[in-house]
Amino acid sequence: MTGGASGIGAAIAERLRADGLQVATIDLNPGDEKFAYAADVTDRAAIDAALKDIRAELGPVTVLVNAAGMDRFKKFTDLTFEDWQKVIDVNLNGVFHCVQAVLPDMIEAGWGRIVNISSSSTHSGQPFMAPYVAAKSGVNGLTKSLALEYGPYGITVNAVPPGFIDTPMLRKAEKRGFLGDTDKQIEATPVRRMGRPEDIAAACAFFISEEAGYVTGQILGVNGGRNT
Ligand code: NAP
Image (cartoon, rainbow, N blue to C red):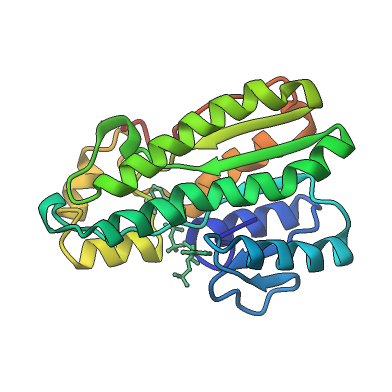
């Protein structure tokens, strides 16, 4: 899985390990967990190199969770094209690279699970996050298309768009004033709390399970009931 060193990705990795899976993580700063690899998801050669090591250690990759992500939080009129490209590159093109790199293993196995972490901002839009929302909306569309294309190979492809999850990324955005007042955000959330990384991990664990084999092309919002 990607983005496994922090926040939501770290919680997913921990949950999948607890469920008995052997989990390899790919991140910019991978930390010291077992099977943690350094690679930038925008760099196909680095992804291929990490996958070569992962396959040598653990065999073919039949489960992929794409959780790596970032944003630049800027007014649209202040964005440079380089900002735009960077955010699209990490959040959308990174998913392209990782999915394309592991699909042959899943096709060969006749079984696979892909879960893409998108964002609840794709339902509502979000100020100062235009390229991020565009990229994550692309991830939702990619998810649906891949589900149709690879369902016949026993591969399911689903997305989890999280909303307002307490992670380093969210706290950084909050500190910079891009998310408004946290108490007001909680008040606007039907279940009246921030999300926890474990909430997202639970949804991923379901999509990855054997019993979810008839569930594909779905976008499952985990957002405390808040869709806008
Ligand atoms: P996080 O704590 O910042 O975790 C994101 C991880 O992705 C970090 O370890 C980060 O590494 C890594 N990463 C960033 N760019 C990368 C790249 N080019 N290649 C490889 N790894 C890269 O954020 P999070 O909140 O857990 O976010 C996890 C996912 O959920 C992201 O896709 C995010 O967009 C999505 N999401 C989160 C929320 C929320 O409320 N928190 C809401 C909607 C969607 P560094 O820290 O070293 O940069």
